[in-house]
Length: 529
Image: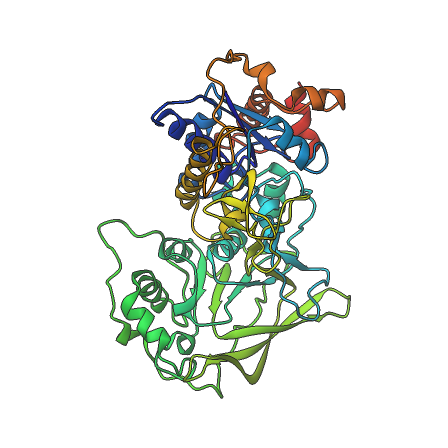
């Protein structure tokens, strides 16, 4: 039997486990693969569980597919164990024929500006982990006592964060948000959110579907300064924006959606019915005059009293303003030492396409800043890592040494392999490529007495005469080592106890199908019950 460890139980790790089982069965001489999926958390599914917005139930349903992978008889989930803490890289390589690292990207990128570490300035990853119930983030981390919030970044994560901040909490009650987080959202004083991009609307990374959701939030005023939507004005002298509007369908859809919000002053409508889709517009209709010397002013801070907020869902209750061509330069300090404002500089693209600041500044009155400018992978103990790309150096998934040579038995998949790009489904093809490399190395391995091949295989075919161990409870390779250290991992059966506890909590609260347990202690208690 070929034994493989996959470090990480998110989409990349579980798609890798699936590809290993399926591809090995299709080899000219089929072989059996036993896959142990290791994770430092006691719960599986990674980004699907702790990164997808709770109100995106269709995306979160990917967990149902991944669950079938974990329920394969040749796949074992081993949670609550951490590489570099409970076992070493060398110990993994001693007991497994191959190891695939698939731990994703867990750290946010920093802005590198003054005031970034003030109280009230956070990474969007922490905020996402908070409302998704990640056990690393305490439910009391955020209180949402700011009236105005800046979200820096124009990707889907930034849109998710903004949507959760302005959405009527009653609409989130049926999601899996932990109850203490729901209490904080119900008590939220946030009435205004600014989503800020360094470049223009044509360069924004969010998808049209995510963007349109903002305009479908009842009681939320969504607006964009019309001048910042201008494709032919002074913000982009290179013409790149206009070209993207012509050649990129996603960009064109985004611009059409935002054109309807240009300096909007009325609450967004209820979601449109399928029979009344938005009328497409040509890029030319999106251009309006704009001058750099008179940028559109930021909307005034809501005057709603924090002590008596307007009931959620009332017209004009909350405002969401998209801003473009603004570069954060400083997070200003209030008299109490917390976030008191965000100073930004107007930007543009020159005729040669160079990005630059114009020397014009604006201060946006906010009391909280969430930066959402990208994710980074973190190095794994003793595993090669390229700090420039924040990935494990690899060739088609084969981990490379400093000399650029494949390391025997070591592979990588997902964001740790290629960087934080693509969507959840992108990891499936990525994992398949890594597994193809792994199995090709396995099939090409010469025997000890044979002459090495030009590109020698890195793994040996399993001994077909060796008896198969059909007891998954006792067969995983690290069991004896961890037991000797007094470490009792979380099995898939224990995870099902956690899942059942969350479903029971939802029933007791009358809140949908599942409510996540709100702390690490509660999760571990359910696992051991």
